[in-house]
Length: 488
Image (cartoon, rainbow, N blue to C red; front, side):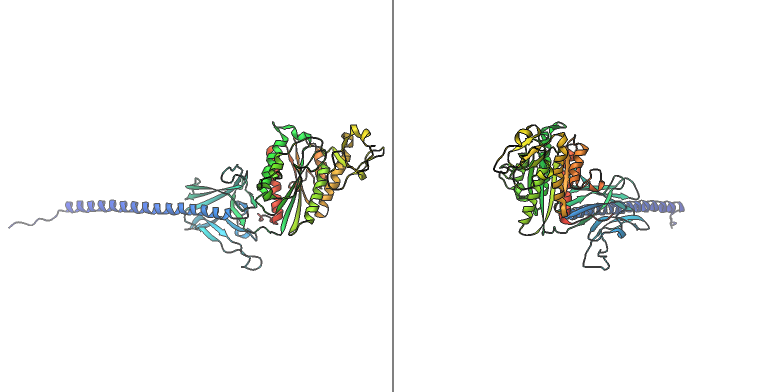
């Protein structure tokens, strides 16, 4: 009979150890596999959240009628302005630690009480433990060639949405976006380098159709506009900047414009008839009176009779407003001068005396081709004629105040009882302070007063002239729309 043999203790221990090792390895492999799967899921969710937030922002920005970026620190639930919707990042707590979420606040006049009509925020991206977000908006200046060929600098709004993991300062993922605010009358960037914009305030109000903007664009075409400014004739720079202005305004249907250019005088002719044209039709409809064609045909010559340009602007605005069939007119004068005023328009004088303010010509219409300078004054002033002919008096240095008085009269007339809103651009690298102050002072504007900065501009080069026209465009559209940005 054979004796039965069992496992020795050593063998049992070896087996137990081996089984433990196999189990440990299997558990680690399974744990790693599950961790990898969970990480992939988290990363996919993270990327999806960031991309969804970017797409959502584009959809809201694109169809907004006004956009204001909100600097860091100003986007808070207790600092939301009535009438505005908000989109941005809020800092919260999740999983016992700091986190953030991307939210959307909607203003609805039909809810709430005591002026509080803002709905509870919608979470575009919910908070997740260990994950934070940062959204930075900025309005970048660039040229756009396609597919929006007519758009120029400053029409795009850029934004970056960055995601951070576990408190790291380097973003794990960044989505860069650019969108065109297609319907926006305003896109204003309030962010700075030290306080970047981390939210946007936007709204979708419709432009009130009852208001009609009447713009008299009064341009200095005196001989000095042919002089070079930084290697280019000033008139070429003016043509480019004025074209940009007209094209930018042509997105609106409730603006009429008349182009008035002045030299010795501001007479209309077949090339520049002064005809009022709807901005959209005037830019897009071909023909000799196309607004862009008129701008391209600007040619400098002669002296600087700023007062006569303002005279034509006043009568043009007055007549056009009176002939308006429907709507409420809002009148604007955009005056660009490149030098001191040295010419005035006066009635015929047949007696042997120097001209007086009562000799200024105040009527409407062309002044004719008769003009006289100081050198010809003695021989021309005694010419008798049965037909009253307005004379343009070209004054030299000692008579400049007389010409300035003509400007002052029409400037005061244009702003009397808020008849028209003025904008003045002094365009030259040699515009004297006295000359600029004279033109601005005619409208009650002080070149050195920051409060008048939206209405008086000194443009010393081409980019500054373009920026001045762009600022005026925004100001006029803002005025027509009756909209101010949210408080910050």
